[in-house]
Length: 223
Ligand code: SF4
Image (tube, rainbow, N blue to C red; front, side, top):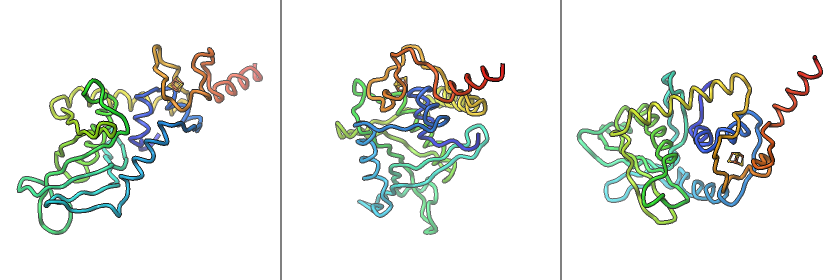
């Protein structure tokens, strides 16, 4: 397995089985939540909407990556703000230096007025990529559209924990991918809002994907 898209890591954190259906079975289904998130991202991911406000440059749709072997991640940031700062990084050939702030948009509301852990993980992955591309140490916040509020995430303070969780997940994803196996449904998995429910049928007792079933049939045929 080569580079991994940040959005696929999010699927894995939400539900490893869902990630497997998408990445290994190449299945896909949309629902209200998927469409809403898609619309919000389309509105923010518009390169034509990069602008400057009160000395702050705002860029949308910025491709970023981190090709260190332990990560090998890539993605697109919703919004990257740059404010002039003598201790910042260069972002163009103007010779100016800037402090960067990464903003990830969520079409939901915070959890008990705080961020959702999986959203924080996504922000951590994006920060790894932004810092790798620009060579700085950017700030990072989540923006929850339902309450129109920014929530900072202590990525620096809890770097060790975020890093360990991410590396564990990436290792598992690569192992499943190499083996061509879809992870089983996690015990206690929350399925509300999942667009794959009709394909997955989590309560039906069906735990195997189509690919697993075919593989099982082929094995039986060769016995
Ligand atoms: S329905 Fe539940 S178990 Fe199935 S893919 Fe969605 S979240 Fe995972």
